[in-house]
Length: 94
Image (cartoon, rainbow, N blue to C red):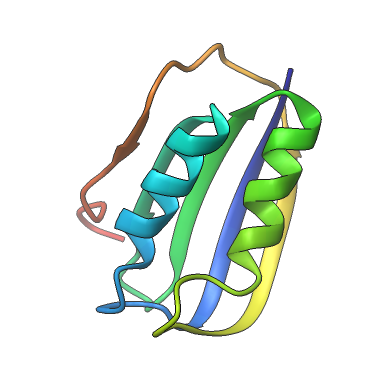
């Protein structure tokens, strides 16, 4: 199992990025979460089998049809054993 934190910048708010990410993760059997950040980026954490997580990371480089992805930052982290995939609210005080 691996874990990746992904931050996507570009035109990624208001284009169903989070919902499409959740549905894509569910289809791949990847656990984690996704949320909008106040700076206009989208942050996602994904855990699972390496090839499945990589497919979700690859998907983030293009996003849903209405998104325009300018950059994707990927960071390796230690897995926490997450289950399911959820859309989280934007953090307060960011």
